Length: 204
Image 1 (tube, helix red, strand yellow):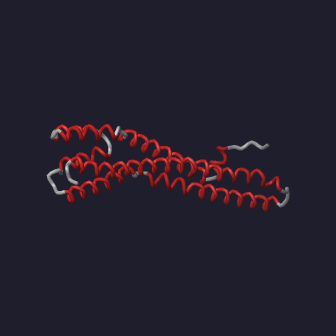
Image 2: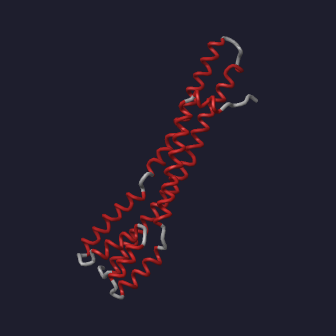
Image 3: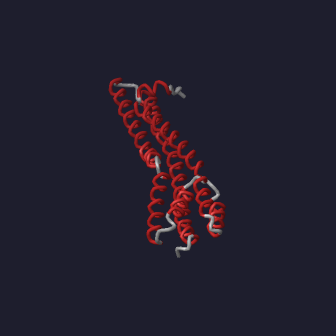
């Protein structure tokens, strides 16, 4: 079996260079999002229970300090609720809904890039394969004879572009769906705890 020279293919196929760039983008933003979600992950149930006890005891200053010291979207909602507890129910509910939108925007930051990598890279790989096959048949036409052996090596190298596109797309799609599930779970938690905050503050 002929040896495949990857460095030579990189020199001849700009699509492989693009795919390497896409893989680096995927890795960069995947690590960034993992680190972000790790930083905002807290024991929400424990936090809400501690907050409820402080509010029930009328210790609003301590409750505000707890919310300010706790990372994550739910703690941000608690800060809004505590600072706006003198407002009416509808107004405070609107403020909480607006904060949820802001927090979801932060959670979804960079996710479209991962989704785009998962959708786009197979087509980039296919494009590189088509160009490689065109080049291989052009070489056959120039050679005039030699049969399939003339184009076999060229086609095998061209198919590497499709494999490279899938190698980037599959992890990108998996990572994107994983993070999207995290966003949905956190958003559901924000919605549920926004209602709890209104109840804790007596705005039912």
